Length: 336
Image (cartoon, rainbow, N blue to C red; front, side, top):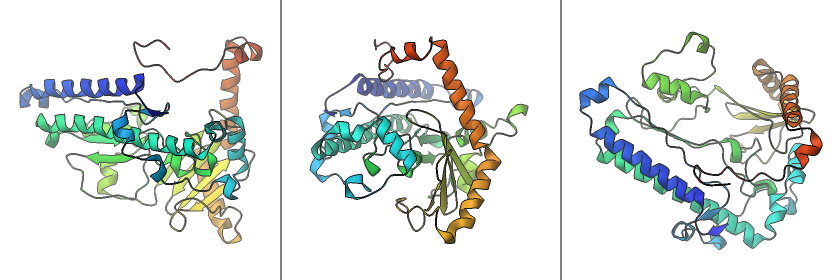
């Protein structure tokens, strides 16, 4: 982490370069040709992502001594949920960082990578404007997850708290009102959004997909809509599920006690209400909402069975443990 440049940084610049070239070619078409052949451009960037190495011009925007200190630190008395504690014991990145100076540098580096990627996206949006395509283009800016950045003594993703699960979402273009919207949304909504942008009906077997067009959500808010997430991956001792609706957010852990948060009163999710007598009805309602979506125990079993089959395919536990540590995905054309 710290100042420098990685293949990921260079990859992100190449993605922006490619997007700009595509937009310039698109602008060269006659308007009638563009109308006859509507197109979609997907620009996928890596940052902000570990390794937390960032060009100095962006790291310099965030002196490590000035970055906000993470909330709910265990050394200050915060007690992690047992499922989260198991995560920490499996992969204690906070301990690996070693001291507070390095933790502050990690946070500053992450912030620097956010600004770095904003700059790349800014280049693409400038090219869109220069090409004269802004008024006919729907732009969706989003991500796949956030980062805990030391909150609760945790780093990276893998948890259900908003640090991980509240991803950025900005929608701009024809038919999108200029406003903020409190309607819960999800990445599964992107598919329906693209269909609407292209005036395409869903296929017959897609009629029951849970998403809804973000353009529709922006124009017809629905704050009582349900958002859902689940996690079965690295470090999880059992499946974890999140249901958010209105002011409340519910976490269900198979084999562990649940969590419940009032996001209006407690947006930082510092006070678990799952064992509050005044919130038993809310907790039970959200547990029912979860079971209307998925059977948590069955989903947990299916995920573990899938992992066990993967271990068997490589030759069993002994072989799997001998495979070595797998690093981050290499960028195209670069050896791992």
